[in-house]
Image 1 (cartoon, rainbow, N blue to C red):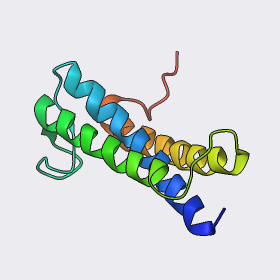
Image 2: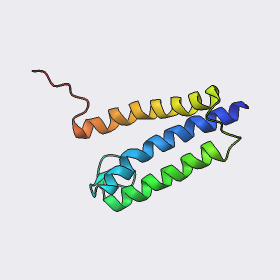
Image 3: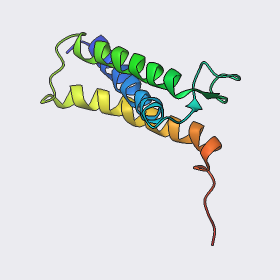
Length: 109
């Protein structure tokens, strides 16, 4: 596997992970933060905008994983590259969206 394929799979995993909160919030009819809100990434965008943004992220993730090289889910290096991208993006999203939804403040009882 060429190193460029690893980079592509990494970013593909990140894009697919970023699609989840936007797409799901949109499907549920809930406004959610997006790059198109004011201010970008902090304000709320409509559910329709989030479905479209989530779909765009799915398409980019698909292209980066399944149209670059030959992604094989049985190859550990392929799965690790995509999984690492997904994990890092997940932590970044949890921290970013946690500021707005109470996810970064531990509850002390």
